[in-house]
Image (cartoon, rainbow, N blue to C red; front, side, top):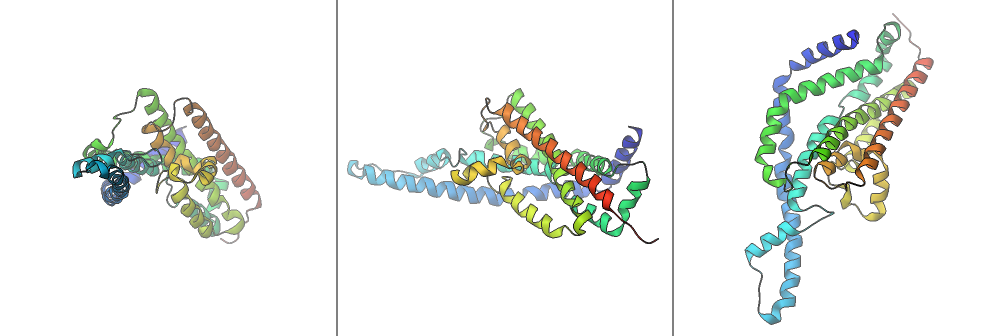
Length: 296
């Protein structure tokens, strides 16, 4: 524990050097939400206009018409995949928060690089476990990031507070939300670390990492809620662990997961976390057993 504490405090001090970058980066992260607001408003508005046109045709005999205020109200009432317009904006805000937890930039490629260049050998001769060292470093990174980015996050969420129609979730949902964020962070870490361990066999993992990032962007719910997918695809995507990186925490916070389904979903997320811990540890032990280093 003393070793881990030393690693954590050193890594935290190192990352606090970049506190200005963290704060600016957080604000830049939320800039695309402005585009998303206009984009989704146009989508919901077009659906509402289509419905209003049908209504006008049906009521033409009676001489009634749909005015602008009614159309605006209709836009607010449109539901897509269980999400209204305001829900959709709130969803994007929460997924950005969740992805900031679960994203691990440079982790897999960094592990593969250490294997390829022989730096991995220091973990074989020193009493420090590679996976534990990297995990503590990532924890320090997230602590430093959120400590500095708390103000920008708070500002953005305050300005967008009207989009959270249901307000703050009840205590049991908020506890599940925090738990899903923590497990999402750990799943993201051990999943990418396992990809990096492939470097023991192939040395280079950039192509595999690119494929993972591509599928993760779409299937984690970062781009859109997976409930918008056709039923023929949604059931399969729900079986994958990627939804716990973005979609699931947001759905929990917004109350989109029924209370009776929540314990099972949390248990499945915990099961996926256990699976990736085992895979990561197994890959590391097998990789080290076949590793060879040459030169001075």
